[in-house]
Image 1 (cartoon, rainbow, N blue to C red):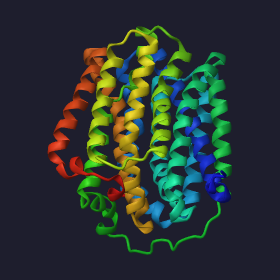
Image 2 (cartoon, rainbow, N blue to C red; image 1 turned 90 degrees about the vertical axis):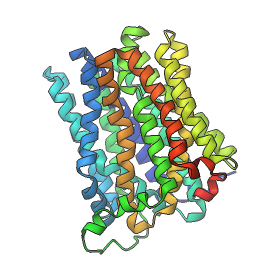
Image 3 (tube, helix red, strand yellow; image 1 turned 30 degrees about the horizontal axis):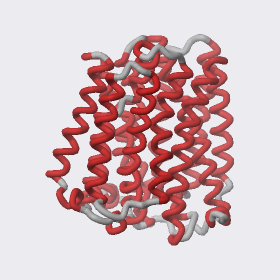
Image 4 (tube, helix red, strand yellow; image 1 turned 45 degrees about the vertical axis):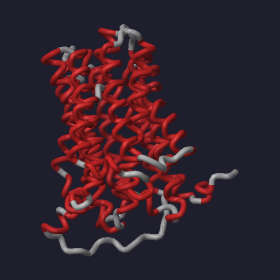
Length: 403
């Protein structure tokens, strides 16, 4: 049966733009992580890469929301991608010129963070405008599946191409960014009226107020935030690949791709068998399994066991992602999507980039294995605390009622 989304040309352009962007970004992150560890042999510096990508999102949150709600979201997205293309071009020159340093990598990370601070809310708020509401759930699932596949392809491709040189990976990523810009630039849709609300303290903080007034939304988002913040070990993968599992860049690429592989499997399963009962309990149970899988990865000395454990983290994290996306995108009025998405991006960025800094910092103090174990145990403690703090979320029966 033909997918009804195929008749929406602008959605397909959006899908391919996002797929190319995610693939390119993941390729770049593999190379940056490997180059940083090769240059410094420091877990702390690996953590700084994540921190420098996160800080711009925090600093620009209020500005981002206003920009996305007041300007054409296609143009905002295209300019963000152009900025990342320019940074990749600079990394090519620095790598070939032999003057790439720790500070240069951190500066590039800061630039990526600033561009993505605008990119993520623009993407999140643009997607629902491209299809009718009756097919929006399928569109969200399709976009998520494509992004997860890109999370598999990007790291694996980056790791394998790295054999030919870091600059080759950057060149391929640059081509993908250029393609993404082209796709985003030719998206067409009926423009809803842009926000004319005067800028005030109320409008600036509207996204924060919206989320805080919906306790179950806040509970779901914050649970995902702290679980990934503590349990994520992405920043430490170069250490595990090189010093513990003894695999090269190709192995690092596979390790980075494993969580996304698990997420794809889970997303396909959830698309076929959606959550209909005990949604809250399933969410908390999934986060707990995520924490346990992190501990298994930390203690493993087998490359296969490590891949399976990482795949499990991605699979069970997908459950909370499904709930969070449904809440944010379907409950938010269009005129506020930019501001709400900007705040949501902080939660996502904190769990990913700030989580990388936390992992790097604790690994610098205790070592990579103890750091990952501490993160997994911390995730289990967060689950127990959140079940007491947000009892209504724990008792939630139907996911449809949430959305």
